[in-house]
Amino acid sequence: MRPPARRAAVLLAAAALLPACGPGGGAAATPDGAAGRTLTVFAAASLQGTFPAIGERFEAANPGVDVRFGFAGSADLATQITEGAPADVFAAADEATMTALEDRSLTAGDPVGFATNALRIATPAGNPAGVASFADLAAPGVDVVVCAPQVPCGAATRALEARSGVTLSPVSEESSVSGVLAKVTSGEADAGLVYVTDVLAAGDRVTGIEVPGAADAANTYPVAALREAADPALAAAFVAFVAGAEAQDVLRGAGFGAA
Image (tube, rainbow, N blue to C red; front, side):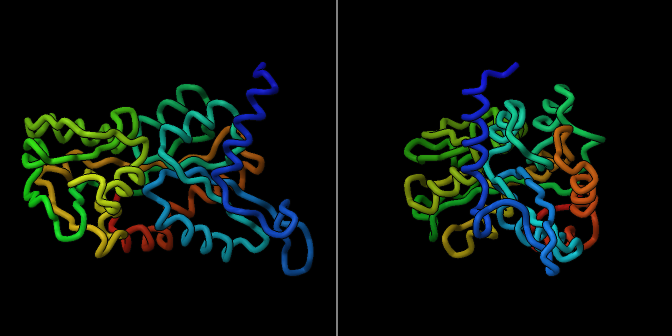
């Protein structure tokens, strides 16, 4: 049995990921005043620009349901789920991370692939270091930031290095793609490897540079209901909704590819 103190720490960490509750917290209220249902979704950091909109559409289709999100690196979220964080659904940025949870029998039903995402170089606006290609990231004097190898965007970076024959020497390895993007937009790095969707979402704050062959190393995003979901039927319904046409329109609009 998990020590009570450790479980309490996990629950506190999970709570810190979630947006603030309504007044007084607790269950959502339906228009007629009856208590509603809350669905907690843990999702990869790269989904932060799309899943809130998908959640709103799911709530509209399911009156009385309150969807709450926890966004972070997929590996960090998987660790929290493994340690008992109270999530109902998990959406990861790669299949390997989801498989690790399946191997521990922490998912319910088969995960559903719902999107793909490829890497792109991001530089600070105007590209002051003059980066023009993936090989330029290995040039002396170019400070490049990537994701750590154990997280999905880092695994994709390693795959791209293997395909191109270019070995990078990053000045920093981040635990999520959001961390990479933050260091680029703040000017702490000359360039970083992030997802296509991150470059599009950053707009004028970055200059994006395509990487030949990146599509061949793209990640497939899976979503699954979790074994300990408080409302298994509601969790399964959200998984189906993410794979449906309405959510897919949101994802395509942000630059995600079809799974």
